[in-house]
Image (cartoon, rainbow, N blue to C red):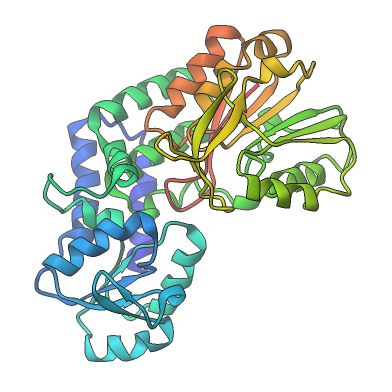
Length: 390
């Protein structure tokens, strides 16, 4: 059995045993697994940073360049340029670098799963360690500043937050799979080791619509909050066999809105709303990238319109999907009448904030105590945790 398979089996045992973040023995088992991966000589061995062009990893890359022996910075999009004062190479020369640095440590700096998988394939299974950069950051001095978003994510491993999230989750999640997902997420936030998620990870193709509690039907009036370019709209249509009553697609990024309109031009009974969902009518700062990384940033000079769903008087809503970059809570606050009157099925992204699971669930329970909840996860990273409610 490979080392990765052994790790996954160890994590699976922890999950099946009911990992408890308040149990010292369980925490030691997790920390032993983490240290077996990350306790390496970063100062003495050459480092190769893969996918290092990710903006979120920029502070990490700079720290490594300043403190360690970085032998190679690899990013196909920046090949031939410089990053943090170092030349960037493409992955076609990675084999040559590894040949002269057989003791190198590889560090994945990718911000999404597709490039991570690519560099894992390119790195191969030659025995050289390959870690995710968040794993390595757990070994850095406490004063390390990774930037606002990275610092926020590192705080997901705070034991008090984890204990609160797990305790609340165990009260509202009754099905065995949800409890295993919850425990796996707690372990992942402590280790940042993707092997911890392997026992519970579902295929990304099923996200939002593969849950029996919230299975879409032919009578849905669907709200897609964070519609991007219509990818979720197309998934919804496929899941319902093209049988539904209406689709309301909300997208804040103007670049994405143009693509959304173009790609749904042949879709029947759809309303595209060039606005974000919020607790009230307002304009908010926004970073427009024309990509899935577009996000609310109140410091931005770009101001875009948001509004409460209840203000739009859309009538009955039966199914809501929210993936709106941390605005899920305010968006729920803006649809209290809709929730109270219609109790729509919910598929809510629950990973943008450390306490999303209890906060989002409690907002629904305060309005409709008869909601039931399930939790699923669809990636090998922190992204794509979905809280289902019906």
